Structure formats: structure tokens, C-alpha cells
Image (cartoon, rainbow, N blue to C red; front, side, top):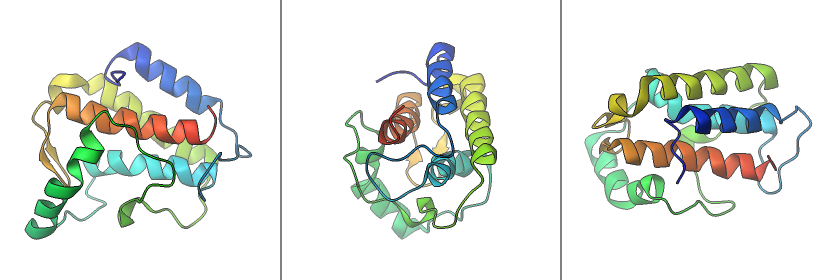
Length: 150
């Protein structure tokens, strides 16, 4: 798995995002390109904001037991896989604003670096290693950028 904390990988991902246009169509799924960009911002919102309420202890335990491995492993997501409710973007979003937000989050994450994320508490899964954080960030971006053909 590529390392999103490395500047060259971050630059590659940002170049791919910059190839998107408001008219870019998905190869699968129901989201528009603007909704996809907003959807990709949610994981970063969970790291950098208090916008999303944290799950209670029972739900967090269930997430750790049944969802964590799928999110933090190197195994790619399958097409049309289920997503958590807080990641569902049902309203239309403004393309340029969402693109700018996502690039800002990706850049901030790279600048903070692996050491910042080593052992950092996840919104849903407890403490994660920098490798687990990388896998969750990069795999999600890879999945959706591939979905939109870039």
C-alpha cells in the first residue's frame, strides 16, 4: 500500500483529484463527483473536527470487532460496498469547495506525518498505528478515485 504520509504520494493523489471535473461520471455507484469528494472528507472531519458524534462504548466495541479490519487492512474495498451512515452524502455539494476541502485535509495529514498518527485514537476503532491510519486514508482515496476514473 502506498504511504499517504510521503509527499510524493500525497502529490500523486492531489494530481488525480485535480483531474476531476464537475462533469466526471462514476464507473459504478450512485454518488456524483461532488458527493464523492465530500464523502472522502468525512474520515478527515472525524480526525480534525467534532462534527461527527463519537459512537457509544457498545457501538465502538462492535465496530472494533466487525469493521476495523476491513477499514485498516490493505485489502481493497469492493465496488458498491456498504458505508457507514455518517459517510452517506445525500445532498448535492459544490464541486470546487469540496475539492479544496479534501486537498486541504490530505495536505494537513501529510504535513503532520506518521509520528502524529502513531497510536492516535480513532473516532470509531480506538488507537491505531500509523500504518493502520495510512491504510484507511489511502485505501479510501484509491477506491473512490478509481471509481471516478482518475
